[in-house]
Amino acid sequence: MTTVSLNPGAARLTDWRAVLDGATAGLAGDSASSIASGQKIVEEIVAAGTVTYGVNTGFGKLASVRIADADLAKLQSNLILSHAVGTGPALPDGVVRLLLAMKAASLARGASGVRPVVIAALTGALKADAMPIIPAKGSVGASGDLAPLAHMTAALMGFGEIRLKGETLPAAEALKRIGQAPLALGAKEGLALINGTQVSTTLAMTGLAAIARVFDAALVAGALSVDALKGSDTPFDPRIQTLRGQPGQIRVARILLELIAGSAIRESHRHGDSKVQDPYSLRCQPQVMGAVHGLLGSVAATLGIEANAVTDNPLVLGPGEIVSGGNFHAEPVAFAADMLAMGVCEIGNLSERRMALLVDPVMSGLPPFLARDAGLNSGFMIAQVTAAALASENKQKAYPASVDTIPTSANQEDHVSMATHGAFRLLDMARNAASIIGVELMAAAEAIEHHRPLKTSARLEPVLALLRDKIAPLTEDRYLAPDLAAATELVLSGAIGKAAGLDSFAEFEA
Image 1 (cartoon, rainbow, N blue to C red):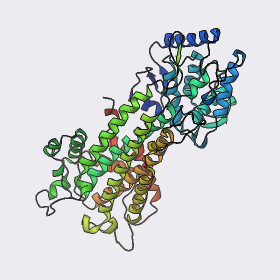
Image 2: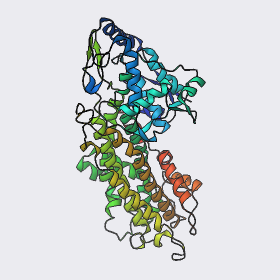
Image 3: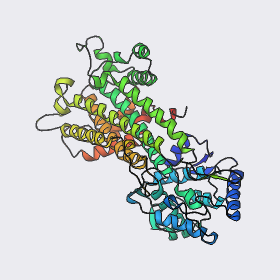
């Protein structure tokens, strides 16, 4: 297992992705002094008996209730147990891994007033591959991701469950196996752990990473479909893109030209093509996918900031200063998640339309549904229906979550972002889009078979080889579900983009 060194407040997007993909993480730099300073301020306020929200008061609507010093530890423990009321499926291990790292890095900035032992509990679980079981649903994305973060914290305290190296165990047993004592909370620490946007941010970043891989695979599939349909590469001429000036459009057109360059199939019809213009799903790829690329870059910038932020409440700002604010409100993440939802919808919409061209003999000039002995065989007839179904499902899921709000906590928390479930849906949407692209890749590869012995380009032939390693040509109807599953995983893993030399996510670092 590789180890990523995270610099609190300045961690890189590619570092977060490495943690998501399985790396463990440690904290870089000298954060010990900042942590000690914040901890000391909290201790001084407790010693002085100064009434301070979250330290010696109740929470939310109960902020006016003064808590006795003897009950401060009990106050924090009660907070965690009472807030661990999530429901629904457990968050995937990759998301939880990223969550542990992101929360540790945020607390290490020193503005949360926690002791080093709290941060060590997070990083210790991460290094031991001990992932708290966290129900995905129950947060409205304001006042922090309270319920899911409470489940994370409860597991570190010995309550609930932990998945240790893939085995689900009672949390206390898992902690015992890794030699980590159950976390005993001090003043303010429970609140610091459950306030914050880290769940919605990790979910959105997981969605971004997956959608970036889908985006790369969609560019590859789009280039393959252009070649398979004997389309034109003229619309990708850089002079066209320069006249508009949109950076994403310019980039996508360049990539498509590079992907198709040198194709013998393209050269075979370059000077004898009777078609005047290709359909939009082929011709307008730079305009549509370029706009999506710009959207992804904007989201990456927002999430890069949020991943490094301190978003709990109240915050330790200096000697004697613990100040209440609203950094826990996840509106930036909610907007980012909604943008991702729109972007991944459009990726799928465009791919499904190219798939429809591939199976239409009037538009493609190829056998109906790419079937050999059509009629006896149905070929990719229903694979296109699956792509259409998934594209429509994504449209239904894309309704913006950020425009919804509902008051909570007796109207104390009267406007919320809905960022958490807005980001959680991205995991399904990315997989749906990956399957749509997978269908197109299968069909485009099959269409290329009808042009053999002509070859496509040097950048695309390795993609075909990768596909053919998992998916045989469709010489007759067969059970196709395993093929689609294999194609989907090739997209989600990034293997398709990598085979063609693409990694858009890494470019967002700049």
